[in-house]
Length: 135
Length: 338
Image (tube, rainbow over all chains, first blue to last red; front, side):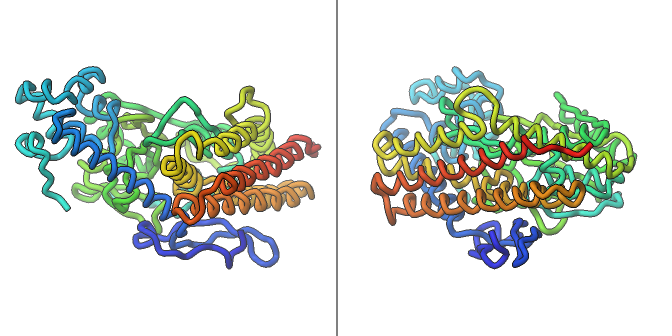
């Protein structure tokens, strides 16, 4: 990449900091310069977030249909997966999987619900009702 | 308490941490490209049976921590590295280091990293930063990705040091044990070793998924993605490839350019024409990686998407594999002066 080819398409990171990139000058010598972002990268990131949103929506629908518990919804909302949820809460993976069932979730003890609520940064009440307050 | 420490920005977090810490410890010659090259940072792996963030598991870098470890070892510098079970203990040792005037490298997760833009905050646990002081409840942070030094409250730092999931950092911290200068002879030796090892890693690891083989394997898979996964998922897979390739902390195209810069710097120490020539090969490889990313973007943005377009994408990767194979073969055949 030549210095003059360094993309400057302002992206999410570019608003906070320039990124160091290595590029060659006219004589072919390497040096560093800052890039504000690259449209190719930011659109890849957009695709990733669109996928996340789709999974959140699918999870919300499943909870409404009582095919899954709100834990599935919040897991997707926090971009987690079952191993991550298990690692943070201290439950076993198989327990987390079980708690994702609507019928099992309904019978969970207050203390277990609280563990999940802390992880997902919501109140127990909001956990049950799939409420999110933040934008 | 604020240590006498100079924040420097880098293209890649572990390179940056390695460079800054070594410089702090008296290795005045070290630069990001040298750290990357001596640490044999260029790599490729596609793990077919693993899914990350619902996409393919692809990495353009060596295992987290290895660049620091190898670079220090090659320069004869002893390293301290600790993991913790207890959060209190992790903070206590950190404070002890700071009190002793020692800036500390930390492995952290980015999901709870407050100064990162929200769009970048996935559960990725192999980010690196340096803690170089504490003022009231705030730790002073030198994050190589950022232009300026920043800070995290003690709670925020604890949270990212104890992020969970794949590559959980478990409070991990590391630093060179002693201040010591290194000679240019040592640098030369380390450069040689780094190049030889990197050539080996890219050319000779058995199996189809790593190094040059891994790039060819990915190229082959990409041809099948459209039919196998359907257009939408295939697009998401390509987007993930590009993110792994071009984003901070990973860097496929970018890594080739750093390696190109490394070979130029290596030439300054060991004036062999091959090094300067092969630097250009890596520039070329980096440029093809970038063209591949542009092609992929056309597909995941829905502008193009026929099988022929996937084939073009795949061909770019085959081209990269050929360029890099030749370059590393040439590097491994270099006759080094004694």
